[in-house]
Length: 181
Image (cartoon, rainbow, N blue to C red; front, side, top):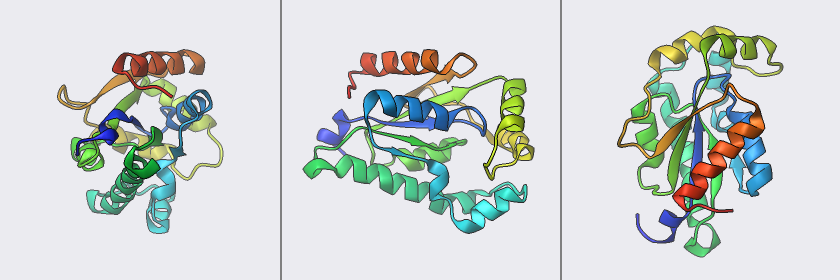
């Protein structure tokens, strides 16, 4: 796709459960004023029930979820009469094939792979309240996680600093890419 959508930015905040996707998205949205979407909100009730019970999702389980997120990205690119709008979305995007689906036909997509040491992730998941994703699924996510390829649009950002520092680092990267609020 060419045109104005290529000048917009859709940041896909990706990574395993507990890495801070929602926290970082919320802080970025406060600073940027961009539309946001929580990737977990696109899961079917069946997928949520599976995860809640500790059952990892399969690729087949994830396809409709990823397609729904991709459609949301397309809506952002088509907004404003086709001029597009910048946006933020969380999505684990653990495998290259998942990321390929998210960016197929969407030139605005740029991945921010959030990472943290496993003990930090484990602690965050023990402390987290009110989320259906159990700590027991962290291992399965780490097993299938494929790091960003050198040919994928994006960067890796550690999340073992304070939120303001992480957000500042992402904003600097955005500025370097020429994206603005």
